[in-house]
Structures are given as C-alpha cells and as structure tokens.
Length: 97
Image (spheres, one colour):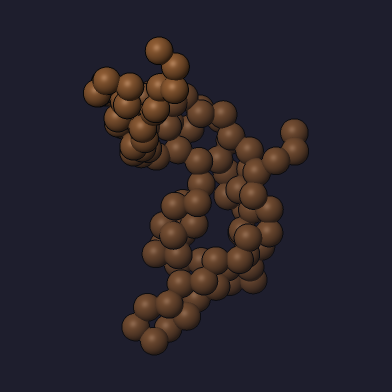
C-alpha cells in the first residue's frame, strides 16, 4: 500500500540545542468519532464539530537518522502522525428558498 509521509525532516530547537531527525510515517486506518452542533439562523448556519481519531492500524514511525531521537523530538513527530483531536468551525449559506 502506498501513501503515508516519507522522508520528512523535523527539527527541534530548545535551550540553544538543535536536534534533527528524518522520519517516515506509514499509512494508517482510523476510527473517527465525531459530533457537532448546527445553529440555523434564517438562511445562514453556523457549524461546530469536535472529534477524535483513534489509530486502528498503521501509524508506525521509521526513523532514518544515525542517532535515535530524544523523547521530546519523538513527541514532536507524533504531532504529524495520524489520530488525535479534531476541532472545526464553519458556516453554511442557503442560496435558494
């Protein structure tokens, strides 16, 4: 199966120290749980959604650096991986009757 993120370079700088790693993230299957609210104001609607994605399969990280990344850099890498919290807002405009 093709896909995922391949050959991403991530750099973390903290306290004058810079750490860098090259990582690939395999494709994943997610179970996405989502709920929302729609406020209808005549022909305009405001939308709010809150959800969470749980990794069902995949989401494995492969590091291509010579030195293993620190725990803090691995946390930064996981920010780009699958799953986690979703918060979204939007609006809809009805153009018809």
